[in-house]
Length: 258
Image 1 (cartoon, one colour):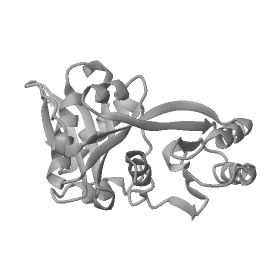
Image 2: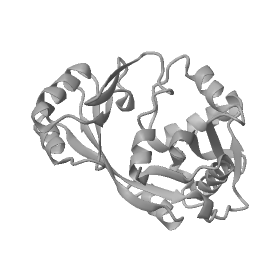
Image 3: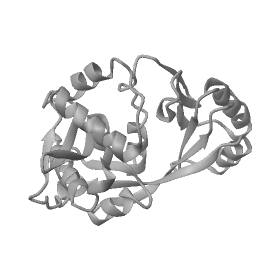
Image 4: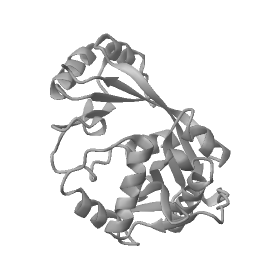
């Protein structure tokens, strides 16, 4: 299994989905939908349809996501030209490009951590709300399900759990956050949700969170740690920290029907 295939398969994990999400899982497609207009909850995560079946599949997904922003995740682990052409013909457009970046954990050099940054693991409601506040400031406000607080704390509060979340603080204020999930069957630790509030960028908080999560991956004894790093933002940052590029992932987005 290639590093890119490990990363792609980790993205097919749906154990984190809120209860109001519907899943379609067939050999040719893995898609999720939700009545809330949240792009990552109205998305296609895997496509394995033949070119002649793509138009019908894209039409099916567009109907499934009608009234909400629809996202199609396109990873170049398989040929993508026919899929991209079909999506563009159905009013989807490429909106974000990410590099698939991974590092070999046993030989990775842990980044240095600025003394001015303190990193805390999310263990209670206060730290989780700090984490959410950072995410909203870094990426835009999120619509959350009423059960999210209990569900997310249950998933990450235990030090032995496969999901861990961290918050970076400066002068007592939360300024950055990031999560990590263990996939022992893939020998992979997936880094996700890394972001810094705009006013605090350039202070080393993102680097500190990468160092913390790599140390966690090392304790888990996995072979690789990786993420889909957005080109122009996180990708050059993690490239400097030793994460090699193994492929590309692109979001194709179609606006909510009016």
